[in-house]
Image (cartoon, rainbow, N blue to C red; front, side):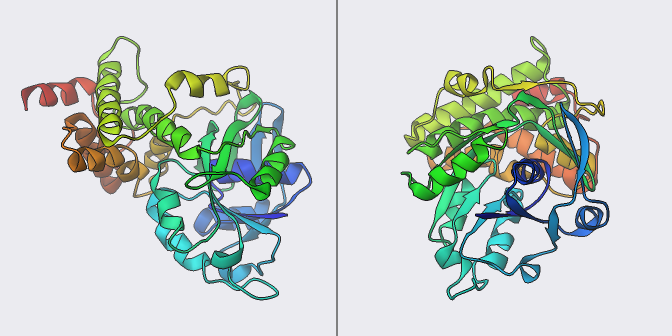
Length: 333
């Protein structure tokens, strides 16, 4: 199988790099300055073993890829870019007849739970991936994945449920490429649990690192409590935090990278890169939506959602708003 990675940032770049190093054929799809850097210099990939430059094939978009029946599309863009990416790829012809949407497996290696729902509108074979992969993308052409002994844990399954031979073959490839890749029949259960976990990275994007016992930790407790209440009101099953922690234990342990680089979560990175948008509409925003559908108040999630979007639009640095200020407003509303 050839892996076509649509969105070669922190997650996509790490997955593509590790598969390439394991001997698989990979195409990284990236535009703009990042795509130009990849084409000109290769991917500068840093892990606990060191930094190396990987000359992986690069495409600017679907027009640059002649799709084959053995291709696997790995969607790794931020959720706000998913609909556009699906529209570009679903109708592309596959050698021998048919289109990508009809024939090719699509893996949603993304945060949140909206991507798979969007994908099923145009792809027949959709697979969810619960991504536990600490990684960094702050500069064009450079990706850091700093965990060991595995680069990450990727929980895979068909969406909305089930497994098949295709996902088991993909999992075997990933297992041979420094990942743990358990295959499950109920992948949304893990993705909703990860969605609750993602609330920590949106809080840190607004307030900076979460300090135990501090105001940021109190704010995180509030957004998570709202999220948990919403999922229960909606009757949505989700894995307990301890189950996700067990997947990480002894598998994904952050270690100092050789380049000394350090960064926080993906929303923090989006603000630090000045990306102009963030994924928060599909993280905190998912809980806000469910809260409105099921009459559960979500004021803390609404506050974080608004502040992240304001910061992205204004080009503000991450961590600029004291958690005390947010809590004060919440407590007086």
